[in-house]
Length: 343
Image (tube, rainbow, N blue to C red; front, top):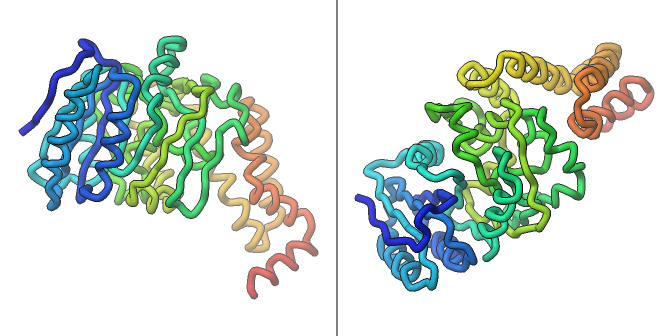
């Protein structure tokens, strides 16, 4: 059964999804974050994914507080009858979207008060993009800290129309601070087909959406003003960097067969995925006494980058590959490196 309240915005812009599963200890900070928004131009869709914990009282109090705002927004609360899992719950919610843009805010995650207002400004000023992304978020519970995009990447290059589909794995961009254009996405994946993440080593719904948009050549707009997005959801923090690249590559290849975009673009992406596979082989070639093959592979990769006019950071700035290329050209240092690895 779904519960909802009224809204002062007749045609909201954003559909915001929050899924719950044993979330009594984490959901309050997320709801307070939403209550603090300076914008009301969204619908907040909350889905209980068959959780043993009951959050009804917390959500009812949240709906009451929303109604007392000077500019209330619509809240929809639905309780699922069975547990669909992280991906299943989100896919279920995606099929409920009926507004121009959508995003997700998992239980325990919080955003700054101007979060949606800043995205609204960006969309108004730059309406022709498929993905809108803020520039920074801290990641307090993970083993590593993410940094501002502008600290390591040239954003002018990054938003080129031929942006490539490995942006989740090859850069420090993570999928949480994004707003997606619904129409652009549905043009690519009209049936909302998603791969099961258990079979593809962590290829979750969020990374799949960004892969699909990037594979189709859709553009991404970065908001210049840094916004804070604190990712505290334990599931997200524990899985974000535990991905299986080989399984994800299989998932990407399978996805390409289902997506709706030009055959020329599809051919280019397949070439690019083969290029990534080539690149990943360099360290193993070097460490299995196939130094000549490692050198040739590295040089082939550079030629591919030059031929396709790809942004430089997609391969040469992956320092471990450059390091193994250098070791392959200097057998003495390679021998020393192998000895150190055995210790």
